[in-house]
Image (cartoon, rainbow, N blue to C red):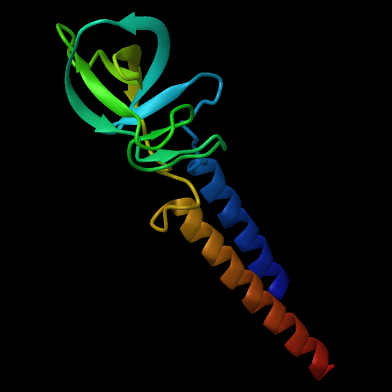
Length: 151
């Protein structure tokens, strides 16, 4: 197989992978949020007066757009505590402790898919496709320069 044909097949393959499995970033920085047990909770302006029990805390804070694993937040620092709210299931909302005795409601917005198809997940099609592209380009380069020396 000549190097031009290999390059064309490689480009078509990589385009197919990137179109079929786009990189999805579920962290929408348009609003403040926390992630708890795989769900995104959007911070509201509503104060909570009666919390039930502590259910977790922020394990990772980042103000840089991206996707992260664990109980992370784009607003609250590591260690900020999460509480269940009396009379409301955690499927609907949780409370975030802002100060001792002060809590704010965070409403559940759906599942957080921590970089399911991103480049940080080594089993993702995007990551595998990228590695295959590098290998393909290395093979084409070796063949091209090897043939050039033979001339």
